[in-house]
Image (cartoon, chains in turn brown, orange):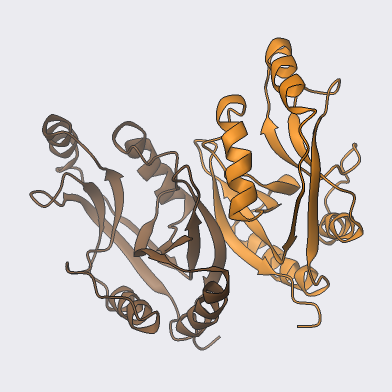
Amino acid sequence: MKYGIAIFPGKELQDLANSLRKRFDPKYALIPPHITLVSDFEANNEEIKEISKKLEQVANHFQSIDLKIKKISTFQPVNNVVYLKIEPNVDLTDLHTELFSTLHLEKPTHAFVPHITLGQELSHDQHLDMYSSLRMRKFNYEETADRFHLLYELENGSWTVFETFRLRKDK
Amino acid sequence: MKYGIAIFPGKELQDLANSLRKRFDPKYALIPPHITLVSDFEANNEEIKEISKKLEQVANHFQSIDLKIKKISTFQPVNNVVYLKIEPNVDLTDLHTELFSTLHLEKPTHAFVPHITLGQELSHDQHLDMYSSLRMRKFNYEETADRFHLLYELENGSWTVFETFRLRKDK
């Protein structure tokens, strides 16, 4: 079964993201707006129990994760993904690193750029349209995440939450 | 903010349900297949913290919930909802009752009929079409749920998981 790990931002930010995703993100209906921490990995029913225990330990090492958003960005020329950029953040980077090392996953070849996807699988024209209309817009969102989620993928490509992990350092 | 409480069955059952929901359930894209425990209630950011603590206590009173499915049923003539019927189950009924009493929610006017919705908002003809094609089909699913989920609704009608509660009695 395919699993992933993500943070769901608060409702306000999710509603904002969805208003933009609706037109530009083919995965709009498959998963709510999120920040991917581990995109996907395979595990069976036994393995996921062990993984779940390990994730609980990881969650005990973090108190909270600040999520600041000031602007929209794009992964072009790598790909035509437009996203809300999460400002650089030591806690978030550390959480990402610890998840990969704890789960013994191969480190991704690209640097970790935390983001909330707004548009993907865009044609050149769609990308230009979306990015040029949004790039000058200023955002000033700030919130604190206190949990992350382990999800699994269904056959139709949608994701179901398997478990929530509250960040519990010093609590 | 509007919250709800539900159990997600395992992937196999969800995939089966989705294969039927795709055509007949307008909420197919808004939430994965689920068993509703509390359909919806309002809570603000402060209240939900208290509610979350209470739900953790409720989860400590249950060990697991058996989910047995043998057939498809309908809520007609009350409404044109077709569903996978969860066989009567003391634990599930007790969990439902305790959730309502713990959260001080008004008891629903209808008896609790645990189910996984497959089709809703159907016209008379659609209902007839769906139910007559499925009612003779025998199902023989059995699994054990060991958690329930607290979710909140976004503006587009989709649901995000806020927290998972593992059933922890005697663990």
